[in-house]
Length: 185
Length: 157
Image (cartoon, rainbow over all chains, first blue to last red; front, side, top):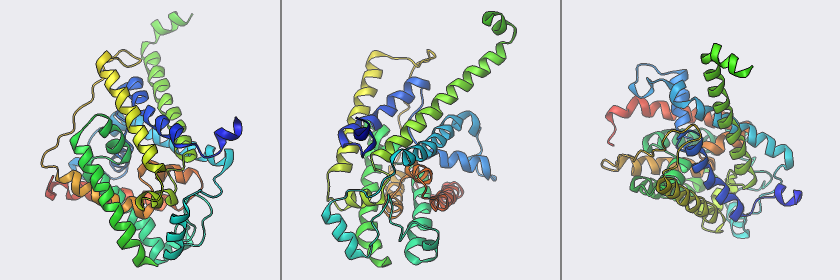
């Protein structure tokens, strides 16, 4: 039992548990599940400047969500010490495609050839970490939500705007996967 | 004894209630961080597998999450459920407008999602998992959000 909880969760456990965070937050305090707004709250707290977009009471609006995100960080830490991920069991096809791309280290959650401090100084590390992070921040702010806010909360509430956003997520993801990543290796 | 205290110090009691409420969000966040890690959805490898359509796993996870969330939201609306403190639950509709912000913003985010292999919640979960360089990705995500705030008046929505 302990082993089955500790090993990677099957999709039929992972998906429903993720989905239950939507009603949990609504019932706890009428809050919409959505993580990217924390980037806005942090900007508002750190460097609001004279921009209307950041001039609001972030503590009142977003303190709950910032604590939720702090919990995500702690949860990640706890889970990694519980039984850290050794190798993610991706399909053989993906492993083959990534090897052809130029990834050789499959240990851990993310390839160390891209996601280490020393890799930041390489083109591929810079693009994946710094440019990628920048696009995540700009894109989610522009779209008004990320995977949690649009793909899960928004689709669950049958919002057309969220469906458009999710189509965009995939359009962008496919372009990056098939056209940008191959340029980096 | 406790009644006496609360009568004398109503503000302090209210404050401690807010504190307990905030603690609940932190604990839920811990649960979410564990869920994201144990389901491997924060893995760059899994995101690549998804965008290459080489395993149904990510689609099964996201799909079943949406179904469970949708049924829950429908039930909450139908039963008129209230929050634990008795407030009504309201879900504000998103303003569709021209839809440009969703299509363009969504596409820009998708580019970043495939490159970093992480959306905002996983950025923090990965940091907790010891992928410390993700603090740089979070920093540049903040820069991206800030630039949006700066350009917002000029962007089509």
